[in-house]
Length: 161
Image (cartoon, rainbow, N blue to C red; front, side, top):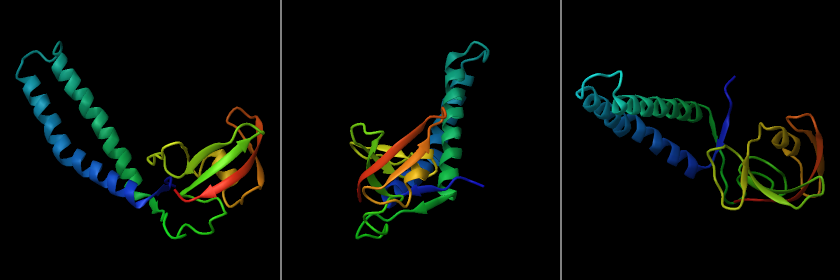
């Protein structure tokens, strides 16, 4: 089963624009670079050719990644309480947590493609994301880190971005 990506409308539009740009202008530009490099002769020692082919590979990887996101996304509304109960952790919200009593840290719960100033991004599918999903302010949860340690997390605040 494909991973579901939680995206705000802004992020969805940005990713759709990037996808369109890469599949049109991007592919044409890289094809032109490859063609110009081929005209230079010997491809075995042609640095321009290898650089253009490398760029093409990276771009095609990004296109496939964007396709997967755009085919398997859930639109998260973040205005007027459409995300659900304001005090409950869910996708599309900023969550401030204290992990094992440390200084509070703020996370955006959603896709890795989302960015918010002052907040790291955490996916709902991550161990920490699953542990806090559906919990409210002042609730605690225990989760297991990738190295097997168990940590206690307390939810300090939940808000819309």
